[in-house]
Length: 270
Length: 148
Ligand code: HEC
Ligand code: HEC
Ligand code: HEC
Image (cartoon, rainbow over all chains, first blue to last red; front, side, top):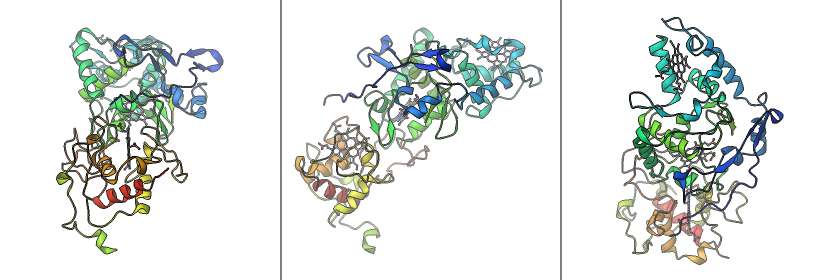
């Protein structure tokens, strides 16, 4: 059978113009080389949302995610743990995190693939002598949001070769695996059918450059692994836990599909 | 009426016993009692059972809000396909269309990480099929009414 290609490319690919022109984020860029033959263009999930949802991302005062960014910055400056330090004690202003989000997840010095959450908890437990934060807890999401915003506009650029290669391969295999009783892979929805409607949902390419996203349906920030969990659960499958090695590998692969799209976080989705 | 909810009758074919033809059709009805097209129309649009509308459009179904565009429109499906073919498509579409995105609605095993419905937790195969034998026959009876 012929592959079913989506026929519904986005009608417009206008940039996301934030704060009256202060920041302009492209929504369509050429696909990275490893997607040759799959996509020509890659698109921000923003293009697939309704105009009201889109509008909320155009002004930082209207963007409900920005409150959590502020809370994350407060946490950045708060001393906690036996070492009597805050993030700021070592890293100074949070602006020092510029560029970090664009290359996450990445392989650490010990050859393990780490997400932003892992780096944060490593500093908390080993450098601050404080408790690790829950992967999907509010404080963790606030910190990842605050750190992501520092890279807003920078193109996603995760490494996929060298020591990252085996993790990337594993994530790629997951992306094309048809999980659950509905036997659906990420690729069925986000590669073959982006632009199509699945009931009331307009399918995007399932990019992660907007994460953490503020999701109107949940009225909260949503982490990447939480989104993955939801998408796999919806195939009537047993999901993987957030913070699992499987989801780190998937995170790397999905991020690499978006290499070139600007970090958008905190974006707004419905 | 009460009979429809009783334990499976001898005349019902279990999911693992369904016989497909080479092209994916199923000649024999899955259950003795005839399919009810009106019931099938409901199952078609019901989010918690068939939810076919997630992927398909039927133009004279304004009652079904937000129809999906993943699969082909089903207008005229009753002209294009025999009942046996429609039964095969609903039970396990991949026997008719290899690699199809359409899920199998009367299939209970052979899955990767089978879950317990939409809980995200592990399920144990054989899973309950998404539609019962009677519901499959109802949907097939409904599809057969879709003429152009
Ligand atoms: C006692 C010093 C110290 C404290 C306190 C500290 N960090 Fe760090 N952090 C470091 C050092 C040193 C590194 C570099 C580690 C390396 O490269 O191996 C680092 C690395 C990181 C990285 C990875 C950056 C990159 O580009 O790889 C992140 C993210 C980070 N820290 C966030 C935080 C946050 C958030 C807090 C507070 C919750 C925090 N850090 C507290 C010293 C600290
Ligand atoms: C049955 C269809 C389906 C499958 C299978 C599926 N998703 Fe999704 N996904 C959706 C829908 C619907 C949305 C919300 C609309 C959108 O952004 O596409 C979504 C959203 C997303 C988003 C958020 C995009 C944004 O810009 O906010 C990501 C990331 C994502 N999916 C990743 C995945 C991954 C990874 C997999 C496989 C593990 C997967 N999805 C499998 C239907 C699916
Ligand atoms: C997740 C998406 C999805 C769902 C849910 C779904 N289908 Fe399909 N269906 C498809 C696709 C895609 C095709 C096209 C066949 C192929 O894959 O080549 C198809 C094909 C069909 C066809 C043959 C199309 C024609 O007219 O020639 C029929 C009939 C059909 N589906 C009926 C149903 C019924 C009835 C249900 C619910 C019980 C259902 N579908 C649920 C995706 C879906």
